[in-house]
Length: 210
Image (cartoon, rainbow, N blue to C red; front, side, top):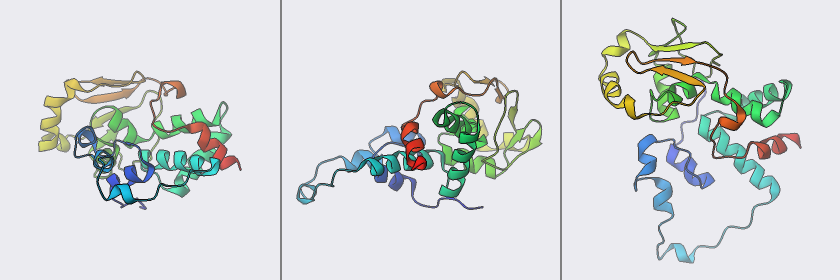
């Protein structure tokens, strides 16, 4: 299975935006982007980067989306092609498809601190989707689906810590979670306007439309 093996903090620095790929670390002074913005004597001698063209800005937004959801280029193109085939606005359809990924749903439910961590948990087979073990992070959920921890995974130290911390985690309106059993349910498909993102999906549509 192909995946991006680069240091995730480097990806944030590349697009000069916090993509929340390290969970709680992104809110601290250890964040690579925070350290990048600290002025130094040496940095004052660097040349300023040239202004980006419209095409360059569109590419930047596309890369932000890819890095945020941990999707490689070929897979991202397939998502966009599917978004164009669906009725409605292509940009919003793309957001909905990306949000429906199982690893993203695990992250949104608060079972992981970041999407990369959620991807790893899914790949290691810790979750059941509608009662069946599923280890494919790109699997798309649908309305009514139930995401639960495997019985064996509830004995891990990670799960025990999660039980104590889950109360403070916020779940989006299109999802529901039983905080006692740590079981999540998809109430409805997410709406494009309700998804908080750090990139401009309209620029992505313009990028692929050329």
